[in-house]
View 1 (tube, rainbow, N blue to C red):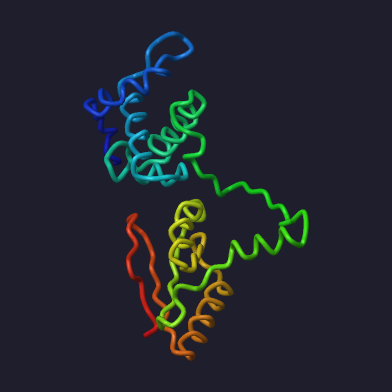
View 2 (cartoon, rainbow, N blue to C red):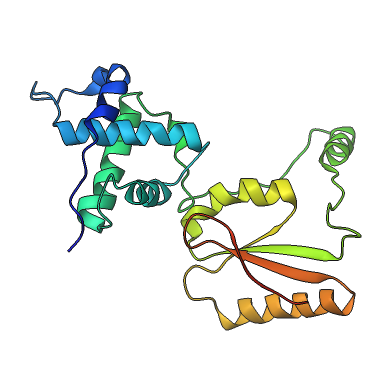
Length: 205
């Protein structure tokens, strides 16, 4: 049986000024104490993260004991409150990342000069060149990719999203690339995250 929702009334009090702007239902009745506490916990996430998917916020709140690890009484509750908070301008819309829907547009420029200027601006030397290492970060959930990619891009690491069970082709290609790197004297270090913290999963050396 999942653990019951743990209320943090001290937390609710410290954030009540932000939350009171939308703590009344359409019926005119105030929101329940556990809802106010949940909203306060969600707002605290913005101090630790620049962006999060709803699923990642749910995981973070379960670790903190705010909601149970349950799809109905946990995830859906967090999902609904994060939507209502954004509609009420309590939670910034930009805070929530969504990788399940996307739009692609071709890269275009007004002139050759503009294209060359952008190419020069985007030039970035591979930070791993000459170190003898290459780094991969593996994730199971595609929904977390938009958050983790900010870190992997900063450090020049490959982000590998397997979406649960990896396909044989995806694994084969990853192994072949690691083998080619190893043949050229470059060791592949693989990180993964199952607890919210990156851990070394393996290395080719």
